[in-house]
Length: 253
Image (tube, rainbow, N blue to C red; front, side, top):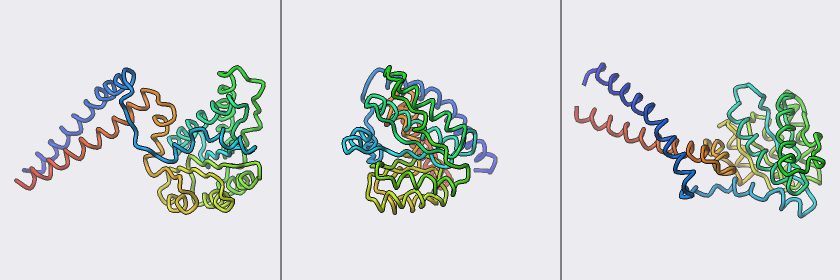
């Protein structure tokens, strides 16, 4: 098979996948709305988040949530969106209990978004008098300065759990080490591959790789998020099959 034929075959496969994507997304969304038969494999990090605020509040302590050194509109927007999904989950639980997570951020715009997320959670429960804007703290835009400032929050005796979701660089160790030394509940997830060994060194509740971007499906169970997750898995299978067929055809000449 000539190089031109290979190029045409690859183009045809790509076009076929692009055509299948909206159809599969529509199908999975419809299925998710009509049935609950979409089991997820257990991920201990997401299981930890379920009821975390309540369990921590029972001991008279609070949950710290770090959204990392991400900023609104930056290169880490996808990881930032995941962090806000986790915040919405914790905020809804906290509003019902009358206790919010302590949220630290490194971006002034993100601080406003996080405050709005908390306020809307209280608004949905009709308990807006319990909302405190000071539960969201802007530390510093510099990653290292942010980590040092957030470290002080994690070291407080009133903090009984530490959740870190978003973009982290080498400054992560400044955030992960205090929680590990205090042996408090610690759940972490980051979009940076070099940081993941540090995550494993400080916590056994780690979101690996693309698990980070499954937060919407695991925490909200919205049909759109579930459909997106199953679409990704289906596309992976189709791509593997396409590669196997291509290798076979090339081998057979």
